[in-house]
Length: 326
Image (cartoon, rainbow, N blue to C red; front, side, top):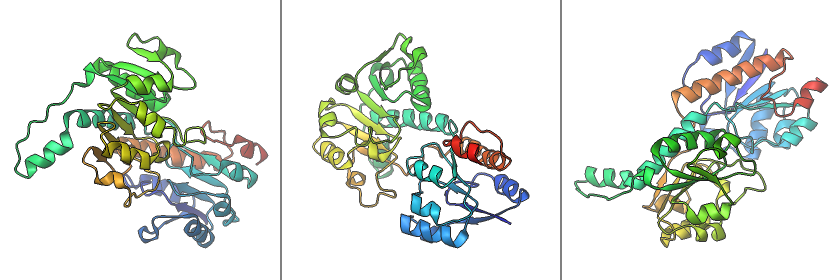
């Protein structure tokens, strides 16, 4: 019997069909108990030793060299998602462990949530809804999204989809990326520019960059000071893109008007001071949590696992040299 370890909280939550397909292919499935969370490296090593999985379907848990080495039979780590900043891919390659992800599966859901965050911030939806439920009758005066300039940091799949939605509203868009998208650059309402120019001129700044050494805390004290005091910051990408302590001070002192945060440097973020601020919309990393995205993600995970074990080539494998060796 082949062991499959599911660390991801969300794999199989929409439909049990994907669990059944794995079982039909000879896998015995074990899941990380909820009482074990949050998962650190020490816990993950223990879990890997006890379950000795051949494949692992992971979420945001730390997949380090020591964690992978704890399972002698490990052949594959499948990310139930897109970002793989929690996985040591170099170590996996050294250990002959295949790493794959599910690119594009959450694009539409994250883009939808991004625009909904913009609208909620601009119209004070959370504050007004809370006030009305408590017996108030406040009339918050907001802004129309189409009248504003939005800065999009990162124009990959998700950033591109956000921009397509914003163009429908009639927004002026400033975009920043190391690699410019030629089709976007041709849009009359969009201009690529430096990060500094974007931060200085945007009414809303939304982050869609991947987490890597060059982008860690790319929004810090200097960058936040560039933004308008009336501007909003949205982060649905990775918590570590922003210096959270500096963001808290900036928001507390009304350096910017507000923020919407779905991701945090430490999750769950019970100790984050951002949760205490009235000008922050804080959600629980729900960007990919739609029925449609979950189903797409589950399908890609199962299809990839089955294909890899058959020796087939998959474009979403991130260290194909391991497949060549196998």
